Length: 111
Image (cartoon, rainbow, N blue to C red):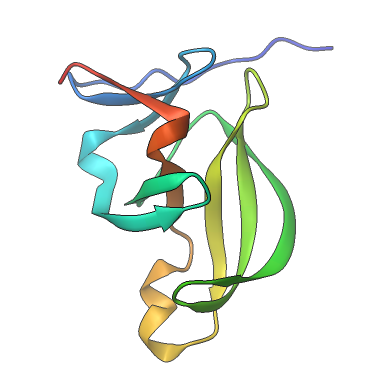
């Protein structure tokens, strides 16, 4: 087992893992607050840190079929959301490479 090096984000408004409080995303990386996750409301982010990816899988979401990877906290292995790998609908292509963090899985700091 090796050491885990966590990235710390600058700025007053940070999203953190609810379980271990590791930094996950900056407020500046929010693209949209109007998303739905498995456990309720979710945010779409351009970038997140301190995560690792689960396997790719096709998933039927509210906006259509997507290939996604679940994302997990690299510190406590808690599921935080997912990454859009591929969108099959032309109007959904903007999501590719973006991340969903579920509000129920993260804490806000500095608000």
